[in-house]
Length: 445
Image 1 (cartoon, rainbow, N blue to C red):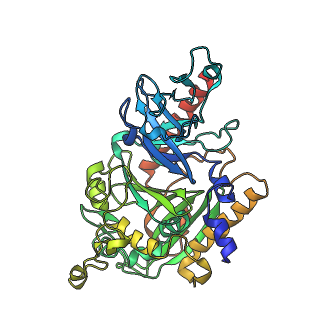
Image 2 (image 1 turned 90 degrees about the vertical axis):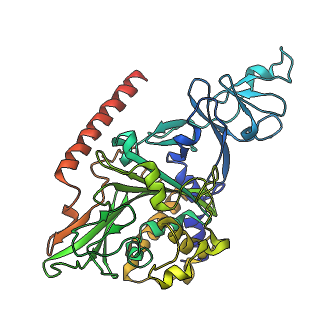
Image 3 (image 1 turned 135 degrees about the vertical axis):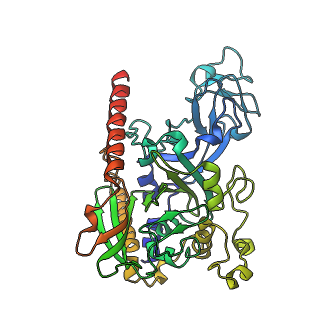
C-alpha cells in the first residue's frame, strides 16, 4: 500500500472517509458496568477523535453528550450527575440525557436562552453488555442490529477491555491473522494429541495440531468475509484436516474460533487515529466462563493488569510488557503474560500507524490482503458518496454469524461446517425471539 492508501485505510478523525464509514454504524462507547448505577460518575469517552461524556441519570436512563459544555466549553466530565441531569461545575448549567437544558443557573429566569439552549446528544442503545452510540446523521439514525452474543443470557457474557496505543486497522489485522497464534500464543495454545478441537482449561486452550503454516482460504460475504485456516492435525492427518474459521463483520467486529466452553467475539473500536479500544467477549448460551475468570485468563484484571477508567496496560511498551527472559529460557515462548499483551507487544511495536508500504505479505496473509483491499475500497466508496459497507439495514441472523473449529474429512468443503446442530437450534430460536421483540418495539414506537 502507498502512504496515501494507508492513510485512507487507517485514519478516522474529522472528515476522513473511514471515520465517515464508521459513523454509519452503531459504535460501542463503553461497557454497561462502567456506568451501572444511577447518578454514577460521568464517564469520559473518546471515539473517532470526538469527545463525549456518558452517564446514567437518577431514573436509570443513559445519556451521551458532547463533553464540552455549550456555554464556555468546560468539560462536563467533572459535572454533578444529580436529579435527572448533568450539571456543569463552571456556571451550573444542567442538561438531561437528551441534551435539553433543564437549568441555566447563571441566566435570568426570563432569559430566552432558557427556552432554546441544547447541547449535542448522541442516540444511545443499551444491550449485550455495552452502551452503544450513533455518531452519524442524527436525522437518519441507522437500525440497531444486536451483536451475535446478544442471544446469550447476561450471566453467560464476559467482557475484557484493554487500551491499544496504535491504529485500529493493525489491531484488527491481528485479530484476523490465524497463523500468528501458532507461534506468538503457542504457550497459551499448546498442542495435544488427545483432543479433537480447541479445549479450554483455566490456563490454556489445547489444540490438536502443531502445524504452524496453515492454508488460508477466503470467502467474501455481504457483511465482510469469512476465512478458514486449514492445518494438519496430529491424529489421522491423511484422513482429515483441522479447520478454524474466522469472520470479519465490517467495520470493526471479528468472530474468532470458539473452544469447547465458550465462543469468542472481538470489537476493535477506534478511539482516534492512533488509539483503539480492544474488547474481547467470551460467551455461550449455556456454558461460558465467569467475568473474573475471563479477565484473569486474559491478563486484563482491572486494577491489577489495566488501570481503572482508562484501561491502559500496566505491562506496556515503555516497560517492555514486563517480558520475562528467564521464563522464556524455561520454555515460555514470549515471556509476556496474557494473550492480549502478547498481541499488543507486536501491534504497538509497529508504531502508532504501521507503514504498510514496507510489508512483505505471504500466502498466510490472504485474510490480511482481503481486509485491506475490501476496507480501502469501502472507504473510497464512502468518499464518493456511496453507503458504507454493512450499513444497508439488512439484518444478518445470529445463526449465520458463527465461527467453526474442528476436524473436517479431507475433500469436504469447510463452508458446510458450523457449530453443532443443538446450538444451531438454540441460536435460531434466539434469532426468532429477537425478531419478534424488535417487531413489538417498532409497533409500540
